[in-house]
Amino acid sequence: SSSQHSKPSNVDDVPSIPQESNATSASRTADLEPISSQTEAQEMSNEGTDDQTDSKKEFDDSSTTQKNNSDSEELRNLLDRFERGEDIDEDRLYELELLERHRMGESLTSVE
Image (tube, rainbow, N blue to C red; front, side, top):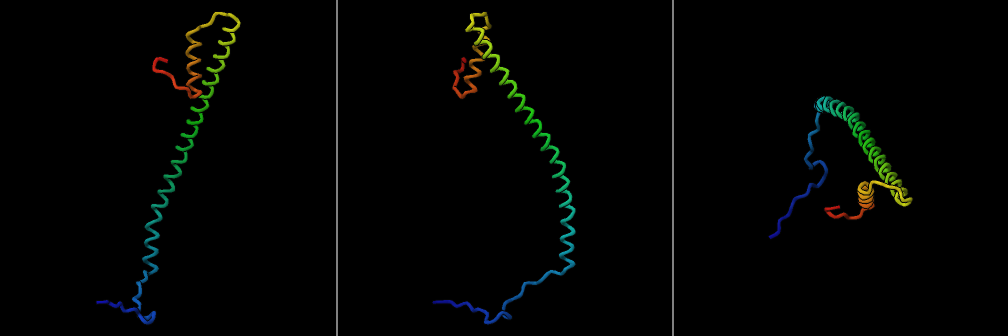
């Protein structure tokens, strides 16, 4: 058995979708405006937080870079002094060498 669906023969036979009045549309827009203002205010207050977070991250990165450079310079100085036969803190030399190896991506043992 086959069922047939009747198709409208012209556009007038198609049911229409009710249109909302301009008053209803304006009311919905008015309801959205406070939310939009609240969202904008929240975004504006978050912008300062993002700037502070970015500044802290930049400071942390800068501080880490300075520490890494300082450690690398200390390692070079200790190696230079060691090569010249001067007395050095060999424990500190060992620690700095391990730190440098770690920075270069080398795996260290749990003892190291």
